[in-house]
Length: 280
Length: 280
View 1 (cartoon, rainbow over the protein chains, first blue to last red):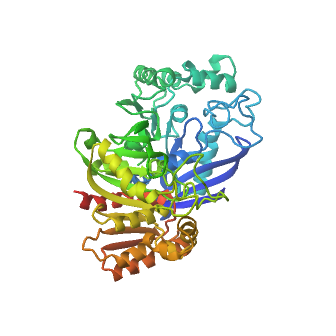
View 2: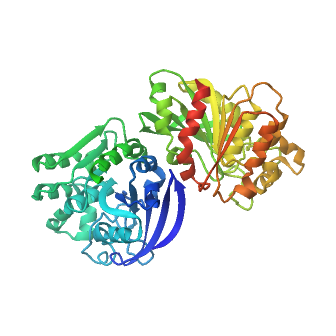
View 3: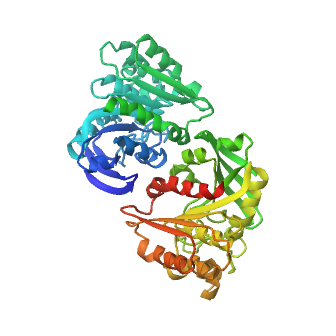
C-alpha cells in the first residue's frame, strides 16, 4: 500500500492509498477515514462506502460530511473506486457513463474483454477488507453502505456475505438491476445475455432466496424528487422482497430530496448511527 | 435572477442563480443556502462566504458540510464566484491559477485590461447583497467569512464596511497581501506598481487605520500544517495589527490541519456559532 496523501479532518485522518490488486489486475486507489481512536491504537470497526456511477474514491470523502459523526462513533470509513482504472483497462466502446470505467457495478465479469479486470465483487468483498485489516488499525467488524450503483453494491455484497457484514444501508440504491435499464445494460455487458446469471447480483432475488438465519439489517433512504426513482431505482421492489423474506428492513421516502450528495449529506449521520448499533 | 438549479439539503434549499452584474459587466453565478425558516416567510440573516483561488460558487457548498448547523441556527449562506467569468473576460496571459479568472482578489481593479470587469470589491460588498435582499427572504443582518484569498476578502470587506457586517471570520486568510507573493502579484496586476494603492485592500493596514467605534469581531482559524502558512498567509501579522488596534480578534492555530476543505469542514460549525451570536 502506497500512501498518496493525507489530510487531518475532524480529529482523525483522511488518507488515499494505491496498491496493486490481484482481483482487478491493475493499480487501485482507495480512501480511508481513520478516527482518532484508531490512531491511539484502539482497533475500530469499518464502514465500507460504495459510490455510484462516474464516481471514484473522492466523492464521498469530499461531499458527504460524514467525519464528525464517524469520529464521535469511532468508526473508520473506506471508500474504494467504482471500477478498475488505467489505460490498459477496456472501457465501453461508446464511452458511456453507465458502463466500463467508473461503472463496475460490483460484479465479477465473465464476458471478454471485461472479465480480466472487472472483478469488483471479489475486490470489494474480499481483497480490500483483507488488505485493510492487515495494514490499518481496524477490527474485523464491518458494515457496508453505498449510493445508487453503490447502494446496489452494498445490498448485494451484504446479502451474499451475511457473516462478514453486521449491517447494510443504502441511499437511492439500484434495487432491482435485472429489471431496469442501467442494470440490464451493465449485466449484459459484464455477465452476458443470459439473464439467469444476473440474479446472483440482484438484491431482490438475493433477499428472496436467503434462507440462512443470519440476516443483516438493512436501512434505505430514498428522495422522492429523485429523477431516477421510477425508471432505475425501484425501492418498492426491494421493500416487497424484504417483506416476503421477513428480512429486517426500513425504507424511508424523504420528501423533496433528489439523487445528489446534498441528499446524502443530510442523512448520513443517521446511517452512521444505524451501523454503530451493530458494530459495537 | 435566473434560477439554474436547486437541491433540498438539511431541510432547506441549495440554489444556484445567474444574473447580469453591473459591476463586473458579465453574467455572474452565485449559490445560496436558504434554511427552512426562510421558506416559512421568516427573514433570516446572511453569511457571505468568499472562496479562495481557483474556486467558484460550488466548492464551499459541496465540501464544507455547513448546512446542518446553518439550519439549526437559521442562517442563510451566499457563496459568490471568485472573479468575473466568460470568454470576453481578460485572463492572466500566462493562465496562472493566482491571477485573472478564479483569482479576483476582491478588489476593484484600476489597471487595463482588468479594470472593466474585475470589480469584485463592489460586486461582493454592494451589488450582490442588494440583489439578495431584494429577491430572497433574508434580513439585512450580514456576516462575512472566507478561505485563503476569500479570507482576505472577508477581512477587508468587513473592515471597510463596519456598519454593514456584524462579524467577520476567516480560515487560513491571506492576512497581509501587500507583503506576500500572491498579494504582490495580484495587486500589481489589478492596482498597478505603486504599492501605496494596495493598502486600501490590506487587512493589516485597515486594522491599523480603523479609528471608528464600530469594530466587528474577527475569528480566524489556521492549520499549522498548511503549506502556505509561512510564505503567503502570515496570520501573526494580522494578530499584531489587531492587538495594536485593540480590535476584538481571536486566532486559533489548529495543530495538524492543512489548507484544504477537510480543515474547513472540521471547524465550520464553530464559525457559524460565532457569527450567530452577532446576527441575532
